[in-house]
Image 1: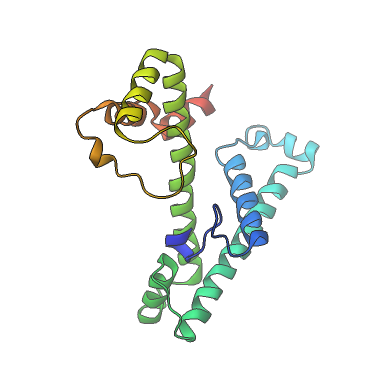
Image 2: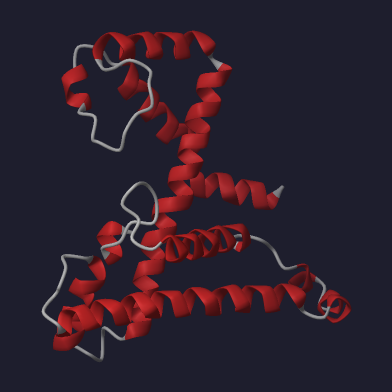
Length: 198
């Protein structure tokens, strides 16, 4: 979210713990309903039986997320008016809104933010899950990768949020092989489609 709105919602530099908690809860709810099938779409009588609870839940989550994103847009807009403009995605979209208001409405800006959030969270989590699963299923590769990282990079303590420069580890290739295999095998979108079909 730092690039999107200039805020951190995880880690040490969280400005508002309440806002961060609200964002994490909203994102978790959005991810939990994404890709879920509404049984009432297949058998409309089921909507009548359950009273449309699923649709009400989806609308409620969407309204909450919309109001949260509108607050972010309004906050960035007020910072721009007070000459506290930040180099963020929302800030750049607001500058485009000043030039072309018919194309860059608040709805469009909020939609673009949602696309960025979902493209970066669900697929990343799924790819990491596949990578860890593959490493656990192949303990010899896990041992080799861990030994390589121990030799080249750092001891296995808690890794801070500081950037680890893996270009220094160019002599070996396990970290690259593991990353590539995880990306090639995971295919998060296809995995989700197959899961829904099953």
